[in-house]
Image (tube, rainbow, N blue to C red):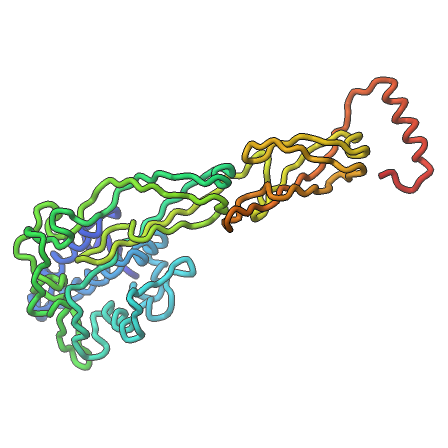
Length: 374
């Protein structure tokens, strides 16, 4: 069974990426095989620490663990589950970034076990960068808001790039020198029989670079936690369940990595007067029997507060839908709109005068010998 990664690293569930990385580096130095040769307990602890960090540093794996616990990685740890397909189910999407090839994917999976399955040191690509976490918010709007569109204000807090050091984590705000031992990869190889075990570089603590003097504002992490406000434009005609994406508005990346994205899930509340069907609207109207039978002209009010005069043809049946073109929802294609449908019902009078009753009785008597009334 997987151990709780938060407990292994000694951090809380709401710990920031910087806090998780700081705790990881501290424990890696403590239990590193180079400093604990022959100590099996330290070796096991070292593996636990790496496994925990592998889960918590990845936004998707972390989200899966927070939601499902150990069940998210049934059959192994975060890396081994990845070897057998998508361990998170259909609700998650893998993005290796940068058009990674199969070699890159396998190498990342093997790193989860602590091995470089290709027996080499891997490619040196400068200090390891981490993409920032994606963020998600949900907003509920009225059908009227969906018709006109609106601007939604989101207030939240997240990691952002440290302005004092430009995200480099250095006191002078310049890129830190590449680590001479790992050449910027953040990993070193240690031969273990057939495999070459790949472990975080003890010289730079897996960062890929060495910061001699840390930025006082972010303590070398390159990011700070701040309150933020984003204005999100919800387009006219948006449908229930739509997801909006704001590129680069998520959490800041580590070591100069790109920021994540911000997503907004839009929910449209049911309306009392209108039912939506794609870009069309349906409105139920109850009419007197005489209006349905003889025809008439009525006035209705549309979703956008327009007064419309609609002709009811004589002989209109109960449940029939009358089409009013161009008064539905915006389609998103230029200035075009769907249609409005009036679904007819009938008003049955509850109080009739003797004269009205007599007239209806005479009408019914004339129709009694026919097969159908209406």
